[in-house]
Length: 563
Image 1 (cartoon, rainbow, N blue to C red):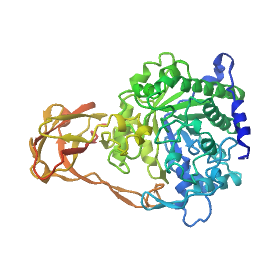
Image 2: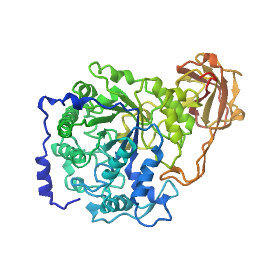
Image 3: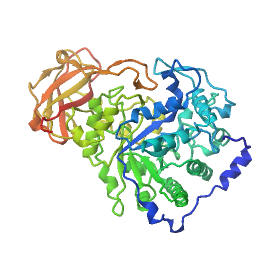
Image 4: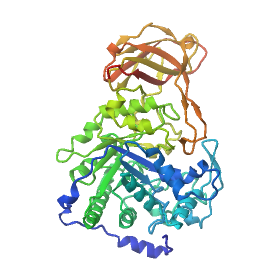
C-alpha cells in the first residue's frame, strides 16, 4: 500500500536503488526465447478510471471489479489481440496501490479540482482517477492484480505500459493547485525538471535520481506482479533533456536502458521465464537520434525485444531504416495505429483498414493500437479484419494522408516534435496559379476493382478551376469548375447501442461528411504502393483574400471480386 515517508527517507531509498547485474549480461537459453506476438493493444487506464463511471449511470459509487474488467476486456473478447499493454496512469502518480508512487491527488491531501466538461458534453470528475482505483485496491482488487489475472484467464500476454516522461501534469497553469497528477517529487525537486519548457514538468534524465526513480517503478511492477513484459513509452513525452541538446545526452537514456535490461534479466532468472521489453519511439531513425533515442545501440546491445514505432501511422516506409541494424537478431516491429485523426473524429472502418493494409505491406510484424477508447463489442470484428492481411484484401479500404497537427504555439509543440503530424504532414496544401502543380504520394496496398479520389477544399470560390492527375495522367474530365462540382463526401458513422467511445458523447450517429471533389480513378493506372496525385489550379476565382487550400486527399478502393 502507499506509505508515508519524509523526503529525506525517500531520497535515500532512491540512492540505494542500484540496478541488478546478471552474470555475463545474458539469460539462460531456456529463458531467452520470446513469444511471437501479432496484435498489441494499449489500454489507457486513466481513461477507464476517469470516464468509465459515465457508462454505468444506474450504479452509484466507484467502479466495481466487474465494471472495470468489462471496460478493459470487453473490446478484446473474441478478437485477434494477443497482448494487452495496460497503462496504470501517467507514470508520475500511480492509479494502483504502489509502494513507490503516490496516488493521484495525494500531494494535495486528496483535494481535487471541480468537475468539468470534457469533449463538450461528458462531465469529468478528476477525483475519479483516485477514487476508482483506490476503491478497487481496497476491495482486494489492486488493478495490476486484476489485469494480470484476467489476461491469464483469456490467454493474453500481460504487459505494463509505462509512460517514461508524461507531462499531462503540466496542463494546468504553473502554480495552479490542486493538480492531482503533479507528484510531490516534482514539487520538491525542481532541479529534476528540464528548464525552459512550456511543458515545465518534464523530467531531466541527466539526473541520476530521476533514472533511479523510474527504475524503481519498473522493478516494483515485476517484484509484486507476474507481468510478461513492459512497454517503455518514450513518446509520452519526448522532453527528456534541454531543447536542442537531446542528441548530445543520448548516452543517459542508453545507460538507463542497460540498467532496466540488467534488472529485469535478473528477475527473469529468478522466475525462470523471460521478461520482455518493448520500446515506443519515433517512426523515423533520424528523429530517434535527434531526440536522444540511440536505437542502433539499443539493438546492438540487445536492450529490448519489440520495437513500437510512431503515433497514428498511415504507412511505414521507414521500416528498413531500423531493420538494417538487426543482422544478428530480428526484433519484431509494430507500427502504431490510431482510431481517429487525419480529418476524422472517429475513423470509419475502411480508413482503419486502409492504414492497416499499408502497414502490413510495408513489412510490419504485427500491429499496435493506441488510444482506442472503445467499449463493448463495437469494432471487435474490425480488429479481426485488420489483424489478417488476407481478410483485409477482401474489404473496402480508404486511404488517407497525414494531416498537420497544429497546437497553435511554437513552444507548446515540443512534446510532439518527433512525429509525422508535426514534422512531415502531407496536407494541407496551398494551391495558387503561380506556384503551379502540387503533388503528393498516396499509398495503396493492392490492386482494387474500383477506386475514387476525394479532394476536400477550403476557401473555394466561384470561378476556381483545377485539374487532377494520377501518376502523370490527366483525370477526366480535365478542367473542373471546382465550386459547383463539390458534393458531400465522407460518411455517417453508426455506433451500436450500449457501445461506443469512452469519454465521448453517447451519440448513436457521428456525421463525418465534408464537401469535396470526386474523381473516378482508372484502376489500370493505380499501382500497389505509392501513387502520385497531382493538383493544378488553372484559374482562381475572385472574392477571397486567401489561397485555395487542399485540406484532404483520399483514395477509396473497393476490392477485386477474385481477392
